[in-house]
Image (cartoon, rainbow, N blue to C red; front, side, top):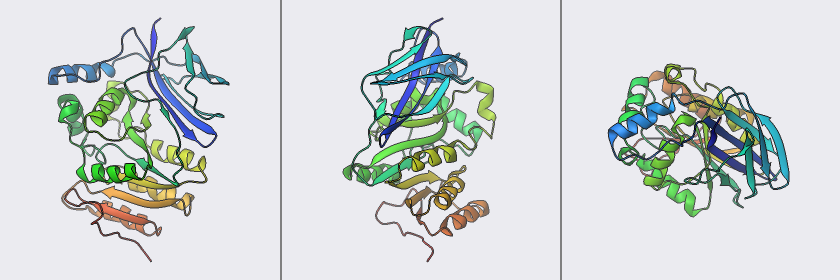
Length: 306
């Protein structure tokens, strides 16, 4: 049986590394950047019917570090390695050494800055219409990467973060099926390349499950923040899903560790439920900005309780 590595992240956290990835069954990698709408739709749809290397033992080696690990039922693996990143990485599956994907970085080293950026993707960095399952699927299928729009405010904010050498990590409920599509959008829009912590591979019928990855974001926030005790964090999200809930919980669980939070307003007005979530976030005392697409970074009015 032929298998290949679809995605790999090695995110340094001090003298440790968070390692995760996805292994698929098959002989050929899916193309991620197509020239036609029909080609894009075909490639995206095909990914939801692709087989995963499920419940199989693999061998991971990085420098002198070695570990045997079992993939999940979705071909996913995730663990903390007691070693800093090393360029010498080997993943053995079914007796075969897998090729590391080359179109997007796999290793994301920690730098000397005291701040780390953790950002959502959909409707925070790029327009995805996640509030509606039908609109989201339509956007994924019929908008090629070069036609996907980025959020101008976030784009400009990222430029400032890059000037300050802040590392950006993307934490998203988007499924790993979309790894190729997402990397194409990031590269085409010249957005920062950061680790892509996506939810595990899905079958097509699971796209309509509202509970998909329900606690995924909060669990990874806990994992990242607790493993980098010398760092503080800026968080970015939007008001369509559970970002404000997860970020409020993170502020409460890690006092003094969250420096600032940015939330994008996706609609023309704030709904009562969104106002309620926003007020709970502000009640933690964290510095926070609820921005609209017409705002410009640096000109926003920061709302904060005293």
